[in-house]
Amino acid sequence: MKIQTYNIWSKELKVLYFSKYKSVKACNALLKPGWFSMILMVSGTIDFIVGSSTVRLSTGQLYAVPNFAKAGTIVSPVRFYLVSCTIAFAINNRIARYGSGYLGVITNQSGFVLSLSKDEMQHMIQLAELLKKKIFINKYGVFQDEMVLLCLNLILYEYSALYYKKDENALAIYSRTEKIVMDFIDLIQEYSTGNHDVKFYADSLFVSKGHLRKAVRRITGMSAKYFIEMAIVSEAYLLLADDDLSITDIAEQLNFRTLPSFSIFFKKYTKLSPTQYRLKLRH
Image (cartoon, rainbow, N blue to C red; front, side, top):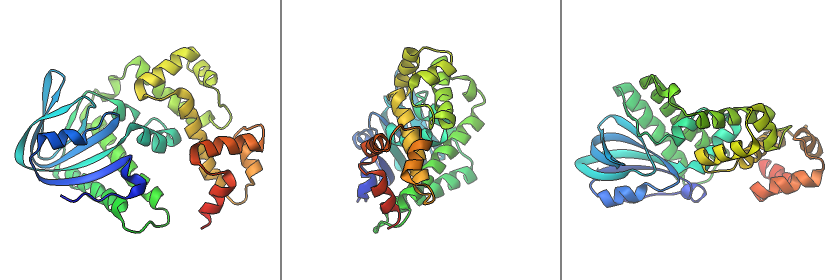
């Protein structure tokens, strides 16, 4: 099978469709540590070994595969979609900007299998096909990055909605640590432009700075500071798209003491200065 990839996404995001799939070894090669992988079964059966248990995935089911799961048996003919991205990619491009909506789903390792209705199945297939089309487009177009992210987020939010709809206990299973991290990310959306220090968020959550750092690292594999900075970068993107705002104005809105400090910060994550990024938007 020929797998198409588009360079800008090939390292952190994949959407693939497999038909007449038989190789257990090849299936396991697709499931990478540190990646969020979702399988949508069109036909056939795959058994996954998850610790001491076996999870059977059959036609019409959707499964977010735990990082430590391995395919054990494949019953042909197997046809399935695989939507897979690094956890960092999902967090950077959605959670850091818009909140903790599906953080629990992405980091959950329980291996909950969703059985979809015919309409739900068709809807998920359409979203997977749309994302695949946007990624594999031959010529890079205006707003392609944004459209790819939108399609990915639609899939993740649809999965999350189905997860909470079909598992009545889903909202109650989060540990205290997970709830702290989700509350932290929600606070970032409201206060990141004015508060860049982890201590502010720790105080707001009535935990120590060290405890918050450990909680965020444990659940997401990333630092609390990184989440704050990604939220600031995301806000900077939006502000730089507004030509009525000078870059000095934007630096002040984002609570940077000087314009050079904002430029250095922005370039650290984008490899472009704010001025270069704004010029890129105009072309």
